[in-house]
Image (cartoon, rainbow, N blue to C red; front, side, top):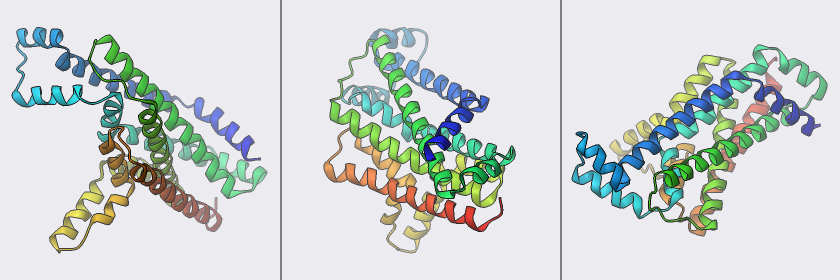
Length: 272
């Protein structure tokens, strides 16, 4: 039964123009970022840029050495640190769940399948797949940019690849679950899209951290928020210890279960 739900969800998602618009914009941003990196890091292109009037500061040179000392997973994780990756997943999740309610699919789905639990987890699994595909495509684009730009970037080992991609998958699925909950609770497209834009920035977490610091309260627990744990993934730069890796997987999965449970509860309590 749940397999049929997922199959229908995949079909509906792949028919949504908004999916391709968002992913297209994301691809354009990644290309622009990699072109910038190539110009700065590749000595030949850097010289041409300087001759054209571009100024390279000492801080830029330090950044160049820093980038060249890290492997390819560093670039992937810094794309995530800019919150663009998470925002993409959140926006797709918000628009996807909104479509079910706007077009009345939700009534038909639940009248046939009945299970709110299957409905919510089908959405989360589909968005986890979108997260995996988006992360893989971004990674391949970064790898292609490094090769095209002839950059001397160390190759990551298999452990770094696996740890980075699985940690991003867990985090992306948890962010998707949060967006699904926000829409199921509010039934507002505006609230869901606003949440998709605001929450990944960490604005609320940072504000709360500042308030707690001001009143001399311990705010380290905020590192276990979705924003905090996503940043921890990027801080690892592919060099995950066993403890850090378990934390980067476990914390998102706890948040995923929390938001999924709340979404199921709301669906059972509120009229469709």
